[in-house]
Structures are given as structure tokens and as C-alpha cells.
Amino acid sequence: MMNWAYGYDGMMGSFGFGGFIFMVAWWAVVAYVLVWIFKQVGHGCGGHRSGAHHPSALEVLKERYAKGEIDKKEFEEKKRDIIG
Image 1 (cartoon, rainbow, N blue to C red):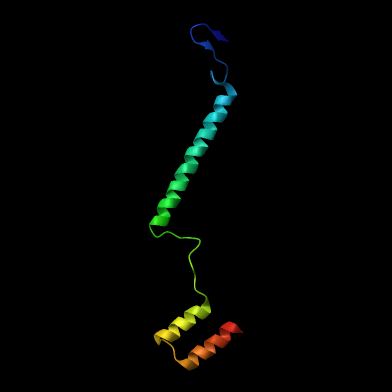
Image 2: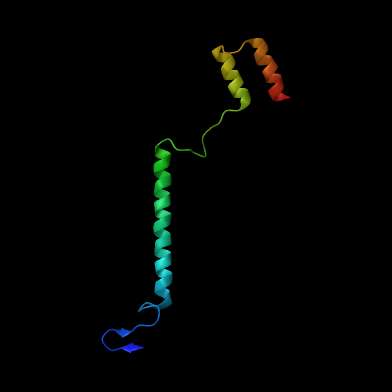
């Protein structure tokens, strides 16, 4: 319908369907940026990092032996269990 004071306004307003698509895309970008920021802040505060090194069972066993928590006999037994 023609409104002489403001111009033609269809069902979607003066921007039409393209304006709706732009609005959805805009909010998707805003959401993406917010998620990215939260992830970056989480990494800086001791958050879980995917590239962190997790020691193997054998490395933990060697460390316990080096600290003196277990003796040589126990180390050898557990080593055989781990290796197979």
C-alpha cells in the first residue's frame, strides 16, 4: 500500500526481505564474536586448553619412582602391567 508521507512499506518494512536477512546475519556475527571473546578470556584464566600435554601412565610411573614414592620392585611390576 502506498503511504504518501513515508513511501512504500510492504509487509517487511522499507528494507524488504533483504533487511530481514541482514538483521539475522548481523546478530549471528555478534553472537560469534561474543563466544570467541568468552573462549579467549577462558584460556587466559587457566581454562582447558586442547593443546595441553597429558602425561602417559608410564611417564607418571617414572615420575613417582624418581620422587621415591615407589621402590624399584613396584616400579618394575607396574611397568610390566602398563607395557603389557
